Length: 360
Length: 157
Image (cartoon, rainbow over all chains, first blue to last red; front, side, top):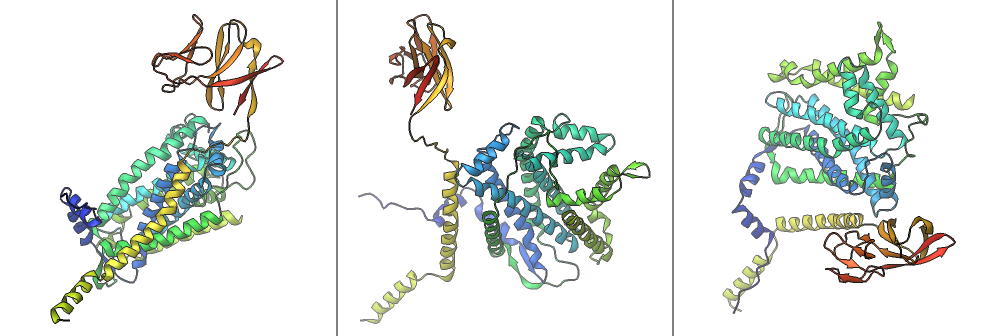
C-alpha cells in the first residue's frame, strides 16, 4: 500500500524545470561558444573577475544598507555601529571597501587588455561601447560610495570632486547643483549620492552588464591580430566557466585575506567647519585627474588651467569611446602600432600620475 | 559459483562504481558547500538585530512631577519603546507600556472616563493597565515609579 517517497535529485529537478522552461537550450547556447586557445588567453579572465567583484559588491552592499542611515547626523554613527556592534559587520564593510578597489583595478586591466589586443575591432564595436559606459559607471560607484561614511576624508574628497565641474563652461554650475543638491555638500548631497549608489547606478550597470555578456556569448572571444589559435577551442560551458570559477576562487581568497588583515579604516566624523586634513588625497583611481590638476598651471594663455584639464578629459574620453571607428587598420585585420603606442602611453601616463601623487 | 553469478556480481559492482566526472562533481559541490556555509552563517548573524544586554535594573529619570497636570498623561520614549506617564485625579503617578498588547499600536489617554484607548481596534485599559474591553487579552506592562524630589524615575529591567 502506498508508493515510495521520491526525493528529488538535482537531475530530476533539472528535468522538471527543463520541461517547462528551455534550460537545455540555454545550456546549448552557452556551450556553443568556444574560447580560443592562444598565448594571450590569460587576459580572457579579467572581464569575469570584474563581474565577480561586482557580485561581491552587490551582496555586501545589500548587507550594509540594512543598517546604514543616509543623513549627516547619523551616517557616520551607523557605519560605526556596523563596524563595532553588528556581528561580522567590520568584515562586511572591509570586504565591500576593498572589493570596490579591486573592481576598479580589474576594470582597468580588462579595458587596457582589450584595447591592446584590439578586441574592439569589428564585429565587437558594441562591446567596446558598452564597456566604455561600464567603466564610467564603475568610477561613479566609487565616487558616490566614498561619501557615504561621512568621515572627514569623504566629505572633503566629495567637496573637491563636486567643485571640479564648476569650471566647465555653461553646464558646470548645473552639474554641480545636480550633484550636490544645492551647491554645498550636505544632506542633499548625501541623499543624492546614496540614491545614485544603491539604485540608479546598479540598475544602469546591470542593464549594460547584461548587454555586454550577451554580446560576448554571441560574438565569442577575440583573438589578437596575427596570433594563431590551437584547435579545438575550450567550450565555454562548463569547461571555461569552471576555469573562471577557479580564478574567482583565488580572487575571493585574496580579497578575504586583505580585508581581514587590513580592515578598512573609518576617520573622524566630518566637520565642514574644520580645516581639511593634511595630505588629503582622493582614492588611487582619481589620482590621475588629481595629479594632473596639481601640475597644470592655474592659468594657461589667460584660460583657467582647471577648465583646460576638464576639456582635455572630455576630448580624451570621446576619442577613447570612438577608438573602434578611428582604428581603420585593425578593422581590416591589420596591425596598428600607432594605436598600440597610444594605449601604452596612456598606461604610462596614468601610472606616472598615480606614483607622483603618492610620492609628492 | 557459476559464471552467471560472478558476471551479475561484477555487473552490480560496475553499476555502483562512481565515474571520475561524478566524483569531481561531488568534490566541487562539497567544496562549494564548505565555502558557502560560514558565509551564510555570518550573513544571518549580521542580519539578526543586535540584542542589547542589560545586566541589572536601572533607574531612569523621565520627567518632573509638575510637567503633568491632574488627570492627564504624556507619552515618552524609553529605550526605543513608548511609555505612557499618567497623573491620576488624586495626583498619583503611574507608568505603563503604551504599546497595545493586541497588535502593537500606541494607546491614548482619554480624560473623560480616565482610561486608555487603542484607536486601532478599540481595546481599552484602566489606569492600572488592565484590559477591560476590546480584542486585547493581556494587560499593559507597568513600570515601577519612584519620585526623587520633584523628578519621576522609572525602573527599567
